[in-house]
View (cartoon, rainbow, N blue to C red):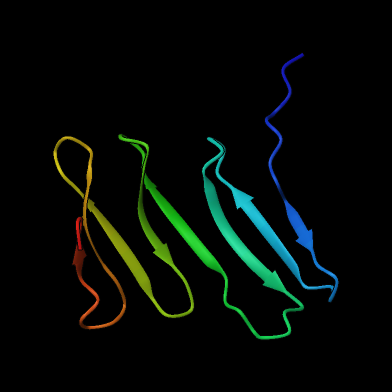
Length: 91
């Protein structure tokens, strides 16, 4: 019998703060959410390139960070929600 891989679904700490993880069918991390947080924390969503199996973006309470890649699949640059938040590999 084939069993699905084990994946962490929730974690609760001593203050009953709960972190929950969601996954795509291919086991990539899809989302992280925070319940009962002492300090309100927005959730995080991830998207991936279906052709090359790499992270394309991450969206959280601040905005969306987008990742760029070179033709050889190496990470090259990204941009975030702040106006001056562009960066490149090696910075």
